[in-house]
Length: 267
Image (cartoon, rainbow, N blue to C red; front, side):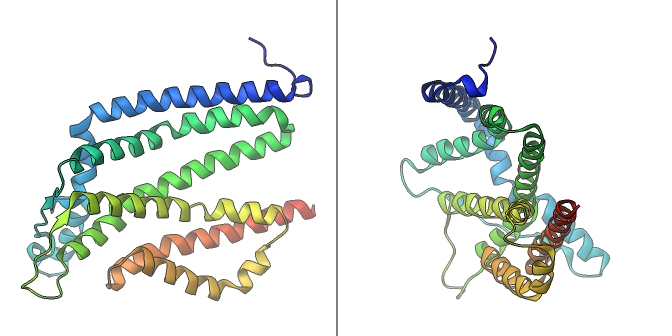
């Protein structure tokens, strides 16, 4: 069916087109949720992997420590049991995590449908720029998620799960607190990795430029350190560095992006 010309569509035509897009997204979201919910074992094998001492990050740290002559067994060996304290907790957490995972899985389709809705109103050059922004936004968001899952969350979980103010007070870690921390850190890292896209947008509006970002680089480093310290509740410099470096690298990439955009504008 041919899509009506943008200038020939009335307000109600736009509303009907939006309703169609939303219904398509909701239908795919429901299917994605059902499929993810039914795949309970692989879903929670993935979610609970960082709680195991055999997780890839812990094995890598133990391997590096062993090469440096440090007792690798003491670094990798830890035991944290997760508990469920209410009758409905496990079922509700199953539903919640299946929902979040399905949202991540269908995100490309959601972005595709939303872009298809707004693209007729864009000029050709605007459409090309918007495609790049959407693609890179998705790539950066997923990169933040992967980095959090592989490095940041496992380190934060291990530190918090084994930290004790007194040996007489044992830790009782609930499945709910585990999944809440995982979702929170994952969302925060995904959002932080959108920094280059935000810088490009602000540069396009003329709010910032590369000179401004270079001039306030030291302030940005302090802000990045504060954000990294808040995201990672661990006290070791290793974890803080691992979180800080990617964010600082994104800041430098943002300077390059804004500089390139300013140069093209000046031409």
